[in-house]
Every structure is written in C-alpha cells, then in structure tokens.
Image (cartoon, rainbow, N blue to C red; front, side, top):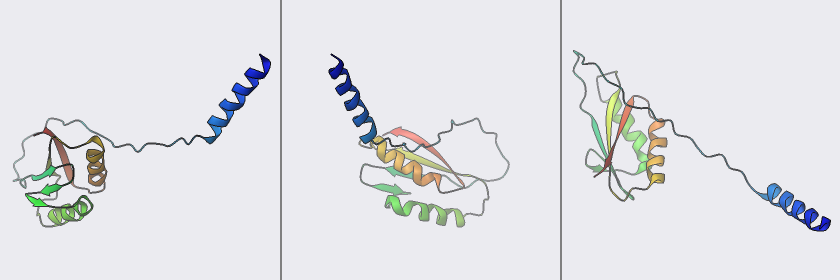
Length: 120
C-alpha cells in the first residue's frame, strides 16, 4: 500500500510540473449608463456588422486587422472631440472568440464607445 501512495504522489508531481498554466486575456466591459442630452450636434454613429469571416464598417467590407486604422481615419475626419458611438451588430454565426478579437481591437482605438447589439 505504501508503494502505491508513493507512485500516486510521483505521478501527481510529474503532471503538476509538466502542465502549463496560461493566463487568459481579459477584456474590460462597461455597462451603458444614462446619458444627458447635449446642445451640441453629435456625429452620426458608425455601424459595424460582424460576421464569422467578414466585417463591414458602414457597409464597406473591411478586415479586422484594418479596423483600427479605418476607425482612426473616421475619428480624424470628424470635427467633434467627444466620444463617437460605434454600433456593432452581430450575425448569428459569430463566435465568442470572434467577438473577443473585435473587442481587443476596439480597446486599442481611443474615442469610441462601442455598443454591442444582439445577433440579427
């Protein structure tokens, strides 16, 4: 019985030392708050339609890698210094990983407030 316990502890030690423990990436999510009406005119929101393989920004197909540059260009073209609204509509076949990839890209682009709509 003693040798069986020794073997079990050796196996446990082996598997603990050979396992890799990865740290998962975190994406911060914020809840939408109530907004007050302002007197200054705001820019119209941008629309992003996210699919499993495609993404369309204002009805123009764009790769996810090019999205940050396109949003920075849209931000530079506006005369408003406030936060610009970005509405994200997901198609039914979008995976959670695809949405997380999009949120990681959007986290690197300042000046946008993304609103995630449900699958349409």
